[in-house]
Image 1 (tube, rainbow, N blue to C red):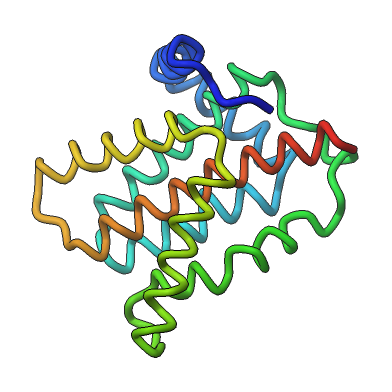
Image 2: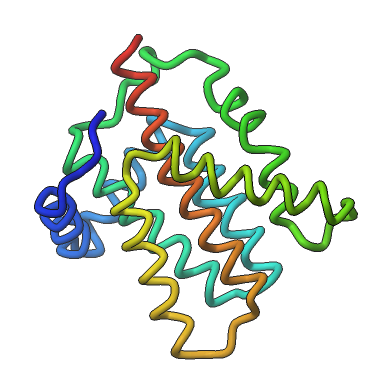
Length: 181
């Protein structure tokens, strides 16, 4: 897995944005069949977390998550086959993200110093572990642009950005795991 160049990213994003509704439905159905747990996590659980804070941002997260799926498929080929992936892969990913993710949830009781340390670790790992920083930056810019159109809380915006970063990291890890199998 390599970091997408600006040209590769532009090409993949152009592809993602050009997909019509019928083709999009087919892509999502296929993804849900091939990666059941991951699909439920990124198209179900993550948007629900955001919906508790801001319904409009939850819809945006689903749209951006679809774009990420299409970018990875366009740039790196079909998703790795489920048989190539360790059966406990998603569970292992959840353990890696859990403490940091909990720190992002401001409604959870947590010591301020621990929360700050975990949030900083999340941001640091997001940059270090994610070779697709250009895609992260593009998605964050899309969220920022969307936020100009309405009134959205800082918590909701930060949570949406954190989750789209996690989605990108999950896809990167999925492709790495599949190629290393």
